Every structure is written in structure tokens, then in C-alpha cells.
Image (tube, rainbow, N blue to C red):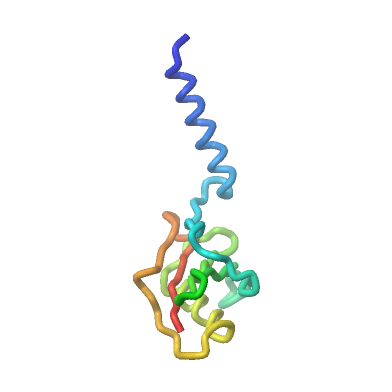
Length: 120
């Protein structure tokens, strides 16, 4: 029996399952090394668009990492994600002026999710 087709079938099955787990093919930003701040989760509407926000940290360290997703999964510009993230996190975690950490910004390939670095 030829094992090459079985390996190919297994690889295809893994790809299909992974695609289903990530929302039908929308790649997600890896936040597995960050801790979710459950108190800082929200859905907000700004300029007619709805955004889902999740805030992450590395315990006992700055900065905040704000994951911004536009609902439904539409692509967005970095400036849009930064505006939503900074406006949202300022009253929730910042007692000092906001400082952007652009070196920490990440997006998924479709630009429908942005992870924005904010220090305060």
C-alpha cells in the first residue's frame, strides 16, 4: 500500500480542521504567550463600525497588547486599529500618558485583526 496518499490526506485533514477552528480560514494572531485581561474585553461602535477588543499583558510588565477585530472580519488600516485601541485602554489601565509601542504591532494576513502595543 502506498503511504504517500495517506500522508497527503492527513495533511489535508489537518489544514481543513485548522481552517474551521480559526473561523473558516481567517488567520488569527497568536496570543498564546500573553495573558488575557478578562475585565478589559468589549465590543464598541465607532464611526458606524463595530469592533471587538481583547486586552493582553505579560504579568507584572508593561505594555498592554490590545487585539482589535472589526465585526464582521473586515480588513482595516493600522491607524483605525490604533485609534480604537488607545481610546479604549486609556481609562482602563493608564494612569500616565500613553506611549505607543509600534515595535509590538502585529496583524494577521488579511488585516482583519491588529495587535496594538500601548504602554502607559
